Length: 428
Picture (cartoon, rainbow, N blue to C red):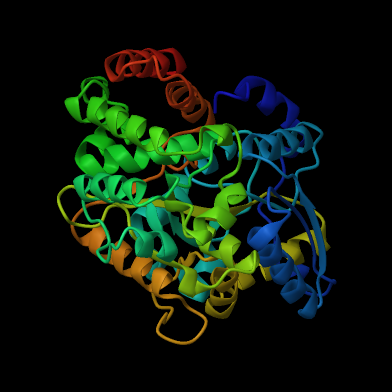
């Protein structure tokens, strides 16, 4: 964690260090209470966590959610401040390598007994489970999964271009974008210009070109892989994507483009399944767009995995311990995961949830199928843009390079590769 001085954080958390693992069995006789920090405050994410809070209250609990709108860093700053003050929340949003990093700066609750009782580990993908049990003990619970490189296509833009085939490879994608442009689709790409969006465009490009190089370069930070020809090719692909976007959306969220996307003035978006939730929450319909796996040059789905989760912090108060137990049980409940994913557009972490019934979109079914196929072909990789592949500090250093490249057309792919390798070395 580059944004935290661990020595200072450990010192600040010294008052907590002697705390014992929550005695969930002792916490049964009190009214459960839960203090929660997340970045989810609005849209489908806000609606989903509000619905989760209502379920918590229906079970007799007191729900105390403190959302911190914005990018993950803002939420982490609040979490760090509370840890330093010796008052961590009972649980907080956290994911990927950050779970292991943050577990070293303040004591965490051990959830092994609750996970075993729910049989949860049996229905969670093994690589995902590992992230939530650093050191071999469950300290966090994944709730929902997204693929950050799903392809959203405007049906009206497809009609304008007289196109009826979903692109499979990057060559297909580029050809469709040009076809849309020629048919009067003003901006073939409807992505936004935020930092995570810039990260998504790049990770979709490199993983779609070669998931093997992506894993080596951005999950393992292999110095040779970071300079591979495939990385240069990914920068060239991102330049094409940027040229097809509205130049006036710099730093703007992709949701500002949704009306034009549905109207057919914009053609395609590279987004996670959350865009489905945002589209539906904005009043648009499933009939307005198509969702398919992102481009993959070997024709097999590549799944850039982003999983939201909650980490549980040690608290001595009996009511908070009871709240942690209730929260853990709810997060692992297939009915809760179904409710949550149907609001947000994600797919459940549980692999035993049936997505064939009403309430699920074809896009979610395709996402679940893509995950299964990607795991089978070793093409499921962790998202860089959303803090799954690396800790926050390394991610920030890499995205600095990507954002500058997207905004500054004078930077060549060769120069971008050099800047990328320098940034990684500087952040190690």
